[in-house]
Each structure stands twice: as C-alpha cells, then as structure tokens.
Figure 1 (cartoon, rainbow, N blue to C red):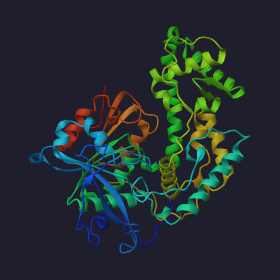
Figure 2 (tube, rainbow, N blue to C red; figure 1 turned 180 degrees about the vertical axis):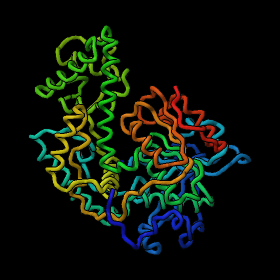
Figure 3 (cartoon, rainbow, N blue to C red; figure 1 turned 135 degrees about the vertical axis):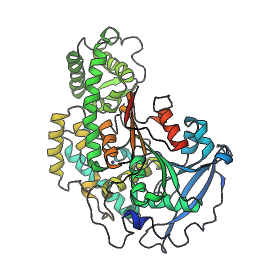
Length: 485
C-alpha cells in the first residue's frame, strides 16, 4: 500500500549487504518473558526487544519492540519461529499468536513458536500519536466539488499535526526499518532464520524482508498480497478498480434473486436501482437502524460488494427505508455503518502510523491539490462506485517529513506461498498476481469464489488450507500456481 531519495548513510539495500555483518550486540539481548496480560492464558508470553531508532546510528537512541510468543506444542518436532503481521500499516500484532493459533493446523502449532509483535510506532512499540480525531482517522472520503476545499484543509491539518507532535519519530517509521526490527527479533530469539505469516500490508513487509535478508527467510506465507509496484497510491486506486468488478458480479447475483430482494430482474435493473438510491440519498439522506446514509456513505460500502449475501439485504433495507415501505423479510440483517472510527488513542495511533508509512514511502503522491481533483474526476468516470475514494487527496500531498528511503523494489527468488481470494475488496487478485511476478520462486493459490479480505484468517475452511499446512510443515510448494474451489 515509489520513488524518494535514499540517504547514503543508511544500511545498504542490497541483499548480500543486508545479510552480512550483524549489528553490534546482535543476539546478546537477555529477554525476560512474562505473561502478556492477566486476561490472557499463561501460555502467551511477552517480552521487549531493543532496536535502534535510526539504523544509520545503531549506537544512538533505542526503542523497544513488544514481542509475544506461544511456544511450539511439540519440542521434539520444533522447526523454529513463525513471525506474524496482521497488516495495516498501523495494526497491532501482539495478540496475533493467540488469534491465529486456532486457525492453524495442529501440525503447524507443533513445529513453530508463534511470534507476534507490534511494529515500530504501533501499540506498545514506541507508539506514534499525531492527535488525530474524527474523520482525520478515516482513509476514504467521497468527493464533491462543494466540499473539496474541506478535504484539502483536512489533509493539510493531518500533515501539520503529525509534523508537530511526532516529527522526531516519523522519518524512522518505515517498512524497511520494521523488516530490520524483525531481523533483530530473529537474532534475539537465537534463530538463524524465520518463517512468517503476513496479511495484506503484511505481505509487502514479508516481501521486503525476503529482499533485504534472503538467507534468513525460511517459509513465508503471504495472505491477500498487494502489488509492490503500486506502493502506495496505486494500491488505493487499485482497490477502487476492483470494486467495479465486484459490483458487476453483485448485480447479476441480486437479479437472480429478485423474488427475495426486489432490486430488479436483470443486472441492468439492479444497477439502475442502486444508482437511483444513491441519487435519492444525496438529495435526502436515508436513516436505517439509527444510521444516516447519504449517497457517499452508501457508495462507501464498496468493499462489501464482494460479499453478495451480506450486501444485498442491506441495499434492500435501504431502499425500503427510503420509500417508507416494509423491507423484505430478513433484509435488515447486517446493516452497514458509515466509516467512523472509535475515538480512542489506539485509533489515533493506527491512523498516524498509516499516514507515516504511506506518505513517507510512496513517491507517487502529487503535491498539487488540483492534480487530485483531476484524478478524481477521471477515476470517477471509469470507476463510478469508488473511483473518488481511491484518488482523493491525502495528507501525503503536504507531508513534511522527508522520506529516508524508497519503497523497496521486490525482485527475488523467495519460495513463498501466496494465497488469495478471488473476490477480495482490498487487495484484489490482480494485485496478488503482481506480487507473484516479483517473487520468482513463489507459488500462488487462488480460492475460486472466495470472498473477503484474508484467506486463512477468515475462520472458514478453504481449499487453500492444505497447501498452507503442507508448505509450513514440509516446505513443499504446489508444483505450479493453481486455482482451487
């Protein structure tokens, strides 16, 4: 989720140099493991690994990376450690071992210590706080000519707040530094190599690690991968493009069930019903289950169109609420909500790190607000459902912290396993294929008909589960890329 200047003083970016001499004191940390929290099982342990804030100055200021662990269930079969990242950027990962353990096969849990960590700047790892509130914590905003000035002001305000409140940390919150932190964690744990599970943004982080530390990367599972060539504005615009395909599929599905939902007997009729509803809500917002939806808020549910059985009752209930007629039986289930984040320090932290990574690493952010307006108009014409959400102006247009490093160019032979749902609203299948093109030794398993963001993490068995288990326990990849049902 690019091009910027790299300071020559930073650690070399080549694979051979990155795999070279250890940092001073690497592997000598005395880790103290304790129960993470009273409300968690004693089997979930936590510690802190010390890393340099600035890897160009390893003897300077340090920060602590919070790390969690569930030990391998069968020491006799133990292979090593399986680090995990839940995505973001900005998502906390300390609780991930406990959350993932039930989703992994017993054979995997036998062989690996499950290792979670809060990436630098996040959660309990030197958290960054810009003091963002309200819609400053929201990534996506619909465009209108009347409010574009407010969008510009909000983006500028976020950049100003982050510079004022966290300017000393922001230049060091990068994917490459998080990958370096992972390697210090590896050494502190006494491991020669790490295995890894990454979701969404975590797939890019994992790929960056394989690029920087290829000889220290063992078995890497990348779930719902993004295309490294699109980092970062291209990732947002690509998700909007994928929404159009999901919307077209949904119109066919809903038309086949007109008797149940009454949205139209053909895809064309369903499409017209939806856009009539959006236009009506723009004139007079619709209230449903205590939530108020204008046209932008309805379109803002664009990620939900991949889950046809969930979005269709919602659209039917909205239509009924707009017309004052009874909704079809059961159509009120799963009412969506406008994108309003909880007003908590965690939400501010997550959003602050999101902007820090996206703005510092993405070299494709225009500085001219009018360029965003032109892109919005163009993208909205070809992607009417969500083109403006993907192209909208972001704080990166006004970002003040000079980027320390470019986004990493991924091009290696890592033998990773990529798993991907066919209908993913955030990292669509084309993005995963982009990742696959840059990892020449990898294999990709696509779940035909799979819906939602995340294959392994969705809690439902899929045809890719056996591939993941086989790979993590034996190292064997599928003979070729495949699609399963």
